[in-house]
Image 1 (cartoon, one colour):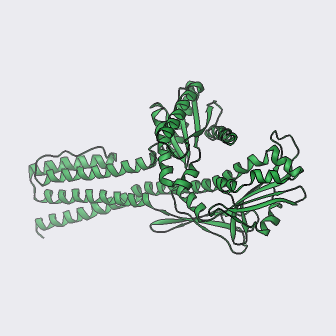
Image 2: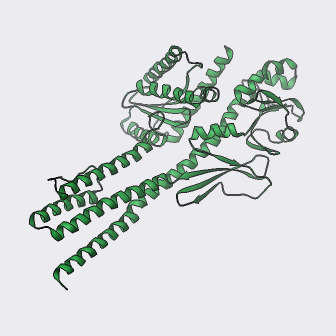
Image 3: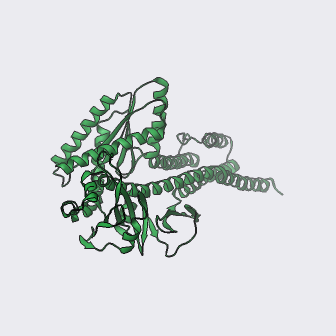
Amino acid sequence: MKIKTKVFYFFILFFVASFSIMLFIGSTTAMKGYDILEEERLNWEIKRIESGISHLVRMHESILLDWAKWDDAYAFIEQPNEEFITSNFSRGLFIDQTINYAIIYDDNGRVLFKQGHDYLNNEPIDVPKQLIDDAFLYPETSGFFKIGDMTLVYTSMKLTDTQETAPEKGLIVFATIVNQPLIKSLSESLLIDLNWEYPVVQYSEVPPIQVMRQNDHTDLNVHVEYVNFLGNISIITEIPHDITSLGKETLMDTLIMFTTVFLVLTIVMYYGVHDGVARISELSGEVLVIHNRQDLHLRVTSKGKDDIGILADNINDMLDQLEEKNNQILEYATYDVLTGVLTRRIGFERLEMAMEAAKKNKTDLVICFIDINNLKEVNDTLGHNAGDQYLKIVSDSLMNNTRSTDIVCRLGGDEFLVVFHHCPERKAYETLSRIEKEIESISETENAPYKMSISKGVVSYVSDMSLTSFVEQADKKMYEDKKRNKSLVDSE
């Protein structure tokens, strides 16, 4: 066999072996990292869905809580009167609070009042007999109720006075029908399509979470138990494998890049001589540096306008594309798409670092849990474009009035968290006051058809706090502020 033939076969074998090795390394190492990110994203989506469902029930509880701790409602249990019903249970209540049924019982389960209203079509509806019969059997309960073919968000509370000193009496029940508009609103707030399926007959326990992985997506099934029925609502969604797909695309681009490099190296080494071999060796060394360091900021040196120079330019173009795609992945994981502030995960990571620094250096650290008032009503009445504009106005005001060292992140829906570094609580309140005035000024200047405002909860860091307790305290204060704001609006 001639030497040229031997060399030719050698380089063919060299090229095939190199490509196989790169393919093996890319498949076993690079894709493993993308698979881990995909798994983390799935867990994050599960927590978001569970949080959204929990928030739906908590919002129902917060509505009923005001009624259950109200002197007038307590007096009605002791002495029912038509004036209380006429004054408080207008159709506006059902529309404003988005509830369908209200029932009040005395201590013996006798129905003192019952009323149903379709808040979507603004017309009265009958209260189902099963709901009347079953609701009294589940006092102090919140969750989902099965009444015939309907599924309800259900909350019941015993009544006491405003000071919570009187003995509990009777029972008040609010219930809302889980319909397509409600599901659509929850889906839009979570930015994910949810499909609800309801059991027809009773059945045994099922796992809370079911995950079924397909080639290009994962079918996620979250089961939620009924309060009064042995069965579970199935909340189903499809999670696309975006990260894995992007990883495969990136791996393919990388394979194309290195395949091109090895192919050209093979040809030039076969036909080239001293200068060509030297230049190829230099280019190969630069590519190996990028490969070994996994640093996409590096670029190869481009010399001349021949094939080797063009190859170097193509490699740099591919590196530019890979770097841009990796930056896109980082940006999607770091910043909220709508508002431009940090995402919940990144915000909590930076808050945790800030807590460690504050504990170590004994510096002031203050957080503020912010909730946008009436965002759901704006979405429901004016549409989600108006709601998105409302979100942008508030987020822009938060960013414009905080320092570059502070942290602003969106927790989801209408909730934000602001972290003030090296800032006493007094200064934080001054900043928040400016933000509230600016939002109010924008609302007046633009003649918005609704009043823009926020509810806030401010907490200073104490060294023995965990991240969860720190945020929960701020959340609790925010809800107290929201109740005060609602009381002021109601009094007006």
